[in-house]
Image 1 (tube, rainbow, N blue to C red):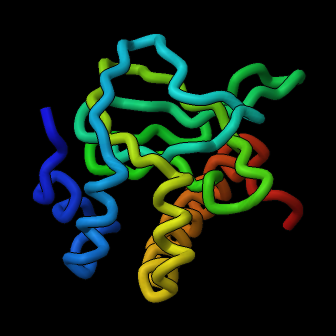
Image 2: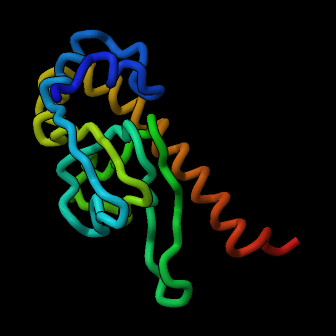
Image 3: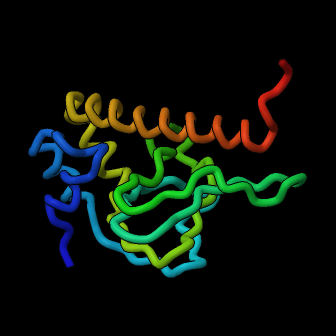
Length: 154
């Protein structure tokens, strides 16, 4: 099934995106399906894509020798997954495990980065949107750390 414009433009981080930029995203998109238990990507692996989670649940995780696997954030329908493709060395910073069968739109990051390099306005708009995602993830991680380690000295 082909990815539609509506599937992309209704996503909260991509709504109000210029229609010509949506066309570029559509040109880089395909649908994938993952079963519960699958690993979407692993820490240190090549970050060559980003994903729009249409349906399902994905856990972003890190592993600690002392605490085992720690879930940083649980992502659900409508969330964008992955920003490591934006910055060299283009390696994943987390593991992403599928908790419930997932339907995703996969965007080819290399093709999209090339398009952003050719159109700096598109690159700027997308950097702004992904900066918002990174800020949201940073804030969520901060809350997770407070939950794990407490509030600290008073």
